[in-house]
Length: 173
Ligand code: SF4
Image 1 (tube, rainbow, N blue to C red):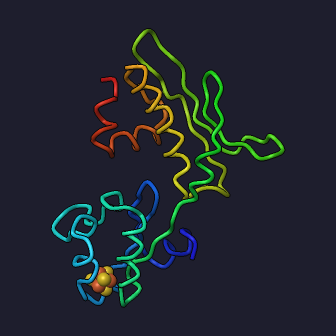
Image 2: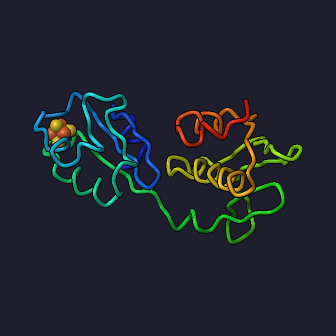
């Protein structure tokens, strides 16, 4: 099933780096197998109660495969796509074999210690695979490697950075 189909069916999405997890509360049979399988990923006492990045994607998949009700689903992201990013002076991007740019993040260096993320774009046909987040992580890596902070004029990039404690520390305030 696609992400759009799962969301239309009422599943809630829990985004991970390599795998996204989807949960539909009304369908849960309360077997507890998810929690038994990994309390790191599935912790009903925590918010959010599912953190896909706390185990490998293979482990997350294996636990979800034990769910008897179908309340838990997953979509593994296409890592091959992430390895094909290109870059130039102010952009990381993805293009088709014909050279059409289908996803990008634009940034500029400001002064000696700041990178500004101006905007991101992901073609609608590629959405839901974490490509936007991976592009932003390219800029974050660049900032870390060059000891710079990040200003985000892009609301999407800001959201990604605010949601991760490690990334949050890199925001220029
Ligand atoms: S394994 Fe599935 S059915 Fe069991 S508690 Fe977890 S989500 Fe609910």
